[in-house]
Length: 526
Image 1 (cartoon, rainbow, N blue to C red):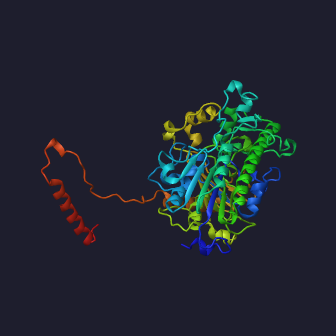
Image 2 (cartoon, rainbow, N blue to C red):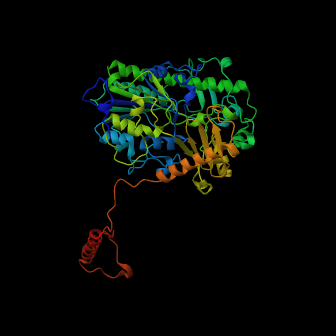
Image 3 (tube, one colour):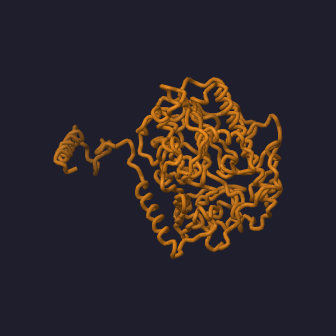
């Protein structure tokens, strides 16, 4: 492995390791950021961060739902590798994760705020040095009952709340997280340190206070991507959601209203990012600190007549990620269209930190791409999601307004059947367990509306993508655990039939077996 010092020429921290800021919003689609080509949204701080670093235009998440995606980009494993495919099967104490690797490698790791959808019990204590709210929220995230939802049930099924209370004393969870991070940055520990800042916004429900609510002009926003002309070839969940939610005839004005509110939430998050980066600058640490900005997945936002996300959704508005890496003496003012997966963050950070991974993972360091953006990093990017029908009893149950979404999955588990997307720069192939496959030509069909799977002229493309998928599944199906187990451990149980064990019998049997296995090993038999 090439060390971070030899890679990062021009960095202003000779002989030291960089600090890290991980700034991670939730449910942020890549094309809802100015730096990624959106001319309507107001994101000056993120745009500046991208201008001072590298923008990754072809970065993809490994799962379309929060917790599995987080497990993937922290372990370097695909969701199926360790079974992290649900909201409630989190990173365990016996599994690796990036924050723990940093802590054990000499970093002071701080996690301001609270997100309970990442680590199983005990793992936070193993992985970070500080955790929680230094500044407490004054309001907790709550969802009103259907009868009291602002605008009524039609807006509720679109997860829209609109303008929220504007009160200077109101501190929600994200704002409390940011204020805690700013307090921490007033007197950070000696280097090296890592500040992990996961937020909730712009996750629905879509609601924000002024000035953010009124920041974006509704009248100029373009309409969402329409549903496919041949709706019979789209995954069945799409029509099911539209019909069950009662949003088949949602007006363009309603979609614009939701989009503008979502953009307002993004602008507030952008302002919070700016405050964190200003605090880093005020300590003179920008050149000593690498900032990684990315999300766990995207948002439909009216595209195809859909809202929110779905566990087997593979569209680019859900899976493409706004990854930016900036600061710490790394190259600036550049972008790359290299195929990237979020699990590549693990080896990238470890290499910058001068650490070796203590486990087998599937990430590839992005340092070569940061040095030369035209470098071919990966041929394919993979995203997976969904379930087998037999897993239905383990599906989540949810209250209003997520009740209809959960009900659809339990009533017809095939709607959320397992799915895998394979992307290269030209094609996106989606394999589905219970439905026909999909094939989209990315340059001519970037919104993935025209499914050309099954056409004779594309048979070769399908075969190539299927082979890539099969190779990927075989190579990443599992990993050998890092810690081996001793064979023939001592077992403290009665012998069969309840007969008393003679004194020294276990020891003599163990010694005999060890001599047998030593002989077999020496002769090459085992």
